[in-house]
Length: 400
Image (cartoon, rainbow, N blue to C red; front, top):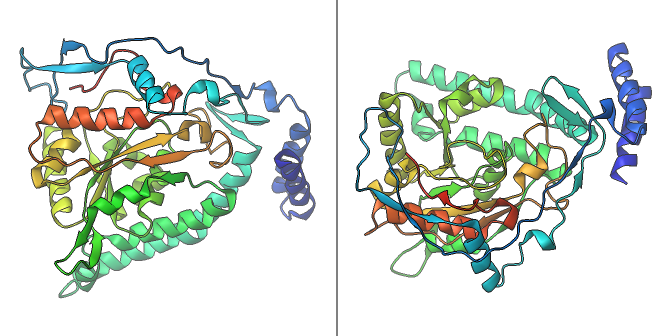
């Protein structure tokens, strides 16, 4: 039904388009979409073999450095140790607890339909339509609104009193602009992930002596990372609440995303620069003190095989510095919504396998060592992931 709906849209676009180039593009896509084998004969079926469950011990000791940030000047302690988990052990434990998210119960054979290749990336019919819709709202709403805010912020800084800095000290307005853009572009295409475990966030709710509930306390939100879709999807967890991402500095070079990071007050970490690391650490700690939520993907980069990798330690040190709790988030199947080789999402987030963000219970940081906190969060996320995304056997919990 979706395939024929896309064909109908292409036909309408073909006969109603005013520009010759647009007509030619629509005609090309229409003719190629009719061919069931796909555009440019690119195979579109993504398959993953089911992983067998093997009995294994849950822990195995091995020397491993757990430095908060990567730095060539930092020495590795010869007595530093940590524990290793096997994916099989986590899977077996999940089965014992009634976890039904195994590969055997889910179909991961996804047919994304016809697609064209643009350099190293591909775009299928769904991606072309959604990409046009997403870019449309980006050009006519998000970019003008962000430019207006940025310009207003600059003008305000030149005037006595800097009124805008007082009205919006933590740059919540650009975060809300981004979420409105997401509502406009994501909702109609059912691109938002399903949220599970939202009730766990009530543990962060402030309550006064009269029992009256207030706002949620700030926390460090930590999730696994396997797709570009992780970034906008996490915004659904917060809605119109303020939050800041801790991202790698390389993303500042991405045209639109880099602009959003700067204007929104997000934190861009240069992992090769010690001064940048210390600055981001101080800024992050201050955000938490000021009641602003932080979001990070402690793996440091997207997983290349969907499975969760090792965590870096910096985010947990930030949370411990102010006693902020850590909220684990297990992100399911974002890589199936937008695989790494696609320029735009290739399917709806609510079509099978459905994208899900499973929010775990906040983990307190008081009285815990760095290693213990990292291990507890890592395992909490690993336990909530589907079988195909659980860490590979003998994946170390932490890395330097």
